[in-house]
Length: 374
Image 1 (cartoon, rainbow, N blue to C red):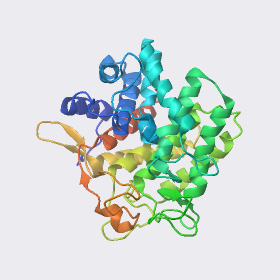
Image 2: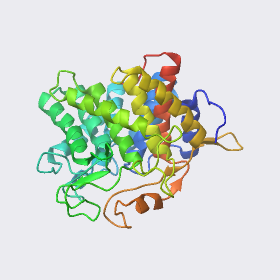
Image 3: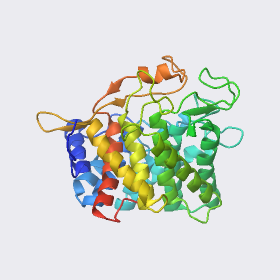
Image 4: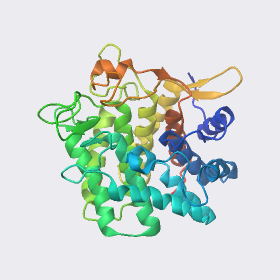
């Protein structure tokens, strides 16, 4: 891993990603969206059009002229599918190509039929009935609000979007640790759900990162006069404070509420997502400036812990949990043993995209720039 600070690391990792993977066009997948969001930010930061072209060339090939994206299944009611919707809106705004607007509208229409819990929270997926996961807040809510900003606004829809963030926090928060757990089952029947609260047993690092990123991006898009704005802002501040407190050597563990347990480890994707959210929150004045300085220290720690360099000069992100979920197959019981059993990989797109986003925000702070991707 790196021994010294690597400047302009967003560009370095983005260029290495483009060289290694080429166009990300094999499936309709949220991890592609995480990378594209980083490229979008990098284009705004540097003005280098190759980062815009990288997004455009891929999605232009994946979206038919009638606005139907290849690989998208509306009837699955899978919140993960909505993450890429932000780039569809972005491309429509930049190019005026009607097929991108149609595709964004198709994804947005999924929310009209998305199954909900009894208090109005979106199910994470149709195959996961009555479950809210923190992951889904990142996948769906910034897209929900960005669509409303571009084609609305509809105050009722904005309030519904903000309420999703609030419900997810209320249902997953463990008052003993001050951290939100990975998910919540309203029926309290899942193998991973507490029979009294319905909460999962642990706070998974990447799930907390997804949620923090959802809060930061949503607060940028949600009008301050919205009735739920202040509560969402308070949640963001409370969780930011707690996450800074539980850092280990400047970064965050795979299982946040189990420091010191054998097998737990510093994990890159969650750490990058949390740092991105903290840096953005401080830049936008949503968090104290001191939090931005602390996040900058954590970004430097991320480079030391997770950024590797090969003999040919190619850089990569290491120590990423390849994937973790709740229920379904493969023993996903939400236990500590489960979370640390998942594969740990390098070159993962989720970690890479999150790093590029965090690196852009860190560069804004380091250079005192106010420019950013909207």
